[in-house]
View 1 (cartoon, rainbow, N blue to C red):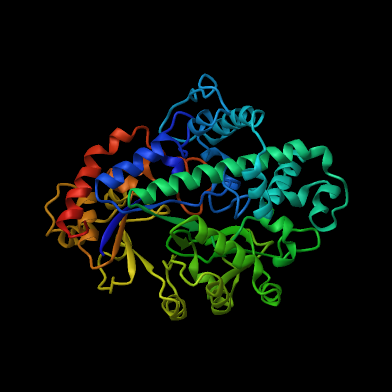
View 2: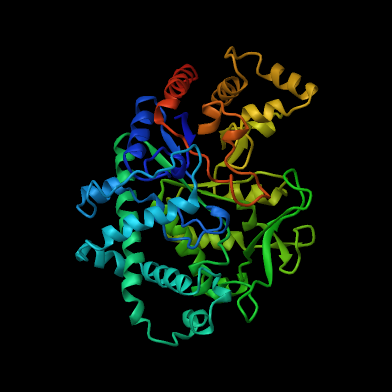
Length: 478
């Protein structure tokens, strides 16, 4: 069945705590999607934001960011008093992570003080060994003034490998971080169940790489190409392209594929299996790295110098499907790729991606792709159009001439919905017709305002989501 969805990061939802979460506004969004024949909600990674507040440089591949825990839920469970769930004083159209995080952490610590460590909690901890590992990582990070683990004092840095001292003195702090994961998962599962009741499926996002400063790398150092001091021998990125003349040097450590293969790809299988349990479909960011990846010597300041290396993608995915034969995968296959990437994608019948902003003037079979106006890494459709040269604008106008909507972003949405693709997903900033201020991320740049755009009120989308519904019906997607 042909259907339509939206891309809306959880962090970008309206919320009284200064950042979107799993509270009332998330449920209201699900209700609005359901009432307007929108069947899919795509989100960005929910993992703990780390370097530059990027969801693609998280502290863990398994943990969820405590920012998304709703104080509404904590009040409902009796862990917070209603008077304690205060409104964040700076309500803006951007997330101020530096102020929101300590504000919300303080509320979580109040809730933790009243938490009853019951049987459900103990079962959760026993069933998910990563929880305590993540908690120890966060406690040790705090003990070392927030530094990257490679810069910790030796006794802390070596603990993951040597278990060289008694950490019982930190038990209360460890339990706090375990508590945040229990509450995160409890609230996420409730929201996901509610979405399913309303006929909404959720596409989650999983980065191909993990952050160097993460529980993943600290606890699994042998799975990565690292020096003796823990620093990476090589880092991930992409060579110069459309986004950057110097390429993008992401800084993520490179996997030791030989070690992983000798150990049945255990780290990858756990990671991917867990993501598929969280979501109805998983979008694998930078899917091409299952085929070939750009390996940059760690000492290089840019990604200009590097080498293409082959990855054992078929072996990893064959092993994964032994565990989860019914998993649904969306492959982020954008950019200038060699044919082998598409062969790998098609071998497993994964859907690919088509971004109208880049490929509107190409004749392409869209039966096996998800169509987007743009992604979280692109400018908004309106801002993109304004920056085009006159000849390019004329080409776009000619392509969109059959559509009678008054604005470029609405015409582009209509064109996407008119495609033969089974699924079309429109980012919220394009649905709203926002300009440059609505851009969510600019690749090759770090920090604010990246990842910080948020919707100030759900009311702002009312007319646009009704327009979307009319087009969904008109194009036979309802």
